[in-house]
Length: 457
Image (tube, rainbow, N blue to C red; front, side, top):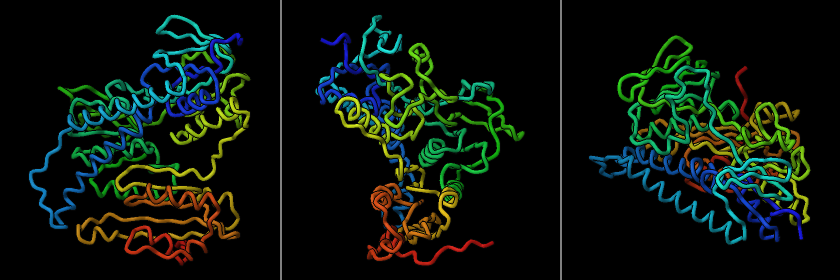
């Protein structure tokens, strides 16, 4: 008889925590899971899934205008924000129920409570006012939006958490940030008819992506009427009449708006978890420090997902959770492979990317070839839209292996998921060239780029 209440106790029931807990339970472990908000975590409840619903909704705003060129009449079109939010909430409730059911069916016990560490084997359940013990503890509490509290009036803004539950659609939105969340919500609000201004401290948006992607998305956002202000930040935010706010910028200007949206990054949710009490080390950003098998500085405590600040993506957290369960509860040591992870930005048009950006590849490989094209999609020859598609291949010139693929354009994310399989498998540029094009499609351009790009120097 074990001296612990559980073989595994997981703090956080997001994507990584749920996958790890379910698998461990199927391997025979006695599993407890604590979640202080809702089972499903950021992705399901207030991240990827609800965001994608808002993206779909905003795309219809463009679609109704484009449909006229194809003979459709789209007069007296209206949008109901309240209906969208209600329908979104209903679906999130359904998914939340599925996650709960799957955990229970696997044999895991769920606690609706904040959980903190008292020592390396003891977890305190705040809602129940009691302690439980576990042989192994998994920290999977995720991350949270960052708000710059040094800015006077910062509390007048919302984050992505609150944006999914606004009572009304604002007429004007100011977004702070230039990463994928900032860009996505700027495009969402613009597609729904709002005036939008994005303010970013850097030289250009999406700085962690290939430079051509950054430039292309910036251009397309401006084409939609989104005002983009770079190399500036919020100085202070003032409350005015009603819902009105005035945002003062460090460049000396100000913007009047209805909604201020903070999208300046996310931080690991380690504060107050009691990690220091248990001896778990965190880095300067507050992330749990782990090894290749997600083990922390304490032998029986592990961590997966955004709280480790490795690759903060839902599918990665799921893979990390699965690798942890295999390693600890199935006698099958498994490492997460972080190479060639596909990524998407659901801007409008969207971004799909896998592998190295050009600037990264030039540092890693001695000889790099670039192939790229920029064109207007066939669809828009009738709509009159000037929206452009960017496609780019980064090739190791010594081996001919494709080490990066970057797309900005319709269905980019769908394309990149398929391309990622080939890129991870080691596909060469010659094999791209040998593949027959599927005509007429946007994707056919990927196999018809034959001339190396020569930059103007």
